[in-house]
Amino acid sequence: MKTGIKVNVSGFLKKIREFPQLIAREQESVLKQEARALCTRYAQCTAPAYGLSFDAARAEGMKKRVESEVHRVFLTRAQGGRVYSAIYQRSPQLAKAYWNAWKKKDTRAQTRIMRDAGLSLAALDPGTHKTARTGFHASVPKAFQGKEMVSQPQLRAYARKQAALVGFAQAGWYAAARGLGGRVRRNLVSATGKRSTAEAFPGYIRKLANRHPGIGGARVLTSGSTCRVEIWTGVRHAKHALPGHLSDLAESEARENVAKALAASVHALNRKKFHAA
Image (cartoon, rainbow, N blue to C red; front, side, top):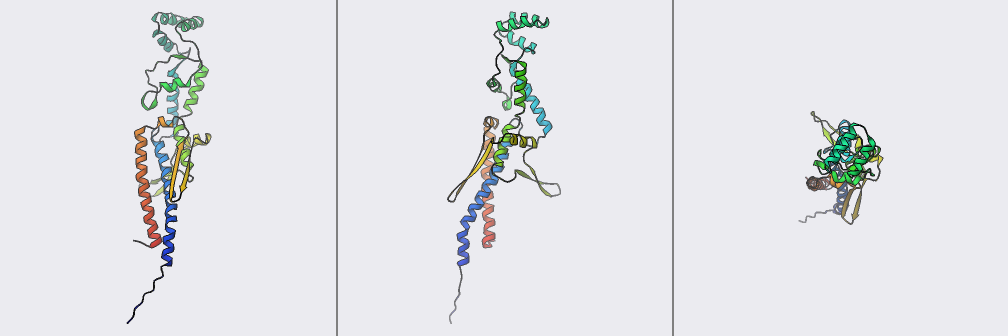
């Protein structure tokens, strides 16, 4: 008795040949997804407002704090007490004379005494502000003593400009995430188990990024079976606003998430393509 079994493997072989291309597409999709998530994580770790849950009202409070810090860095003629302290460090005698002139509102005498103490009006140097940011989260310490005399209009304009940049480093990471295409949203689960999504970045940060195009971006590079996703920010102070230990933590989490997502994708492909359990 003869028994024969005929097996047609052409369909199976076709699936095998298609599998690398499917894996490559899944790889790119996963990398882009996790790169977007890493951009969000970077932004959450960025100063001055760590996290992305704060609202516009809190952002306004932070802007006022930045303006206040800038006003501590520089001196103006209107800041009589602070000018007195700066002169006192050079000459207690001149400081006493200045205070008498201040009380008498004798501006000519004030100008002469400030000049004798080495406090002459100069153009505002942003580098002075940058150097002064030695406090917690790159803030200006409350005890900082300003030594450069600038005009009130200069100081006001610079303070407002710096306040407007609150969230700018985070906006750079939002722009990087948008550079990968798709929507930058986060998943939500209500107390009843209902699932939904919401914008990952607050509105004012998205507006900042829209007002300053090109402050961040991303690109996908493929070579054979290798895929690489690059993300970057063009905000100059972004590196200083993101503490090293927090960026290391974000990158470690991203590596784990990529590995898990790739494994899940391959498993799903196996089930779909080969009906594997």
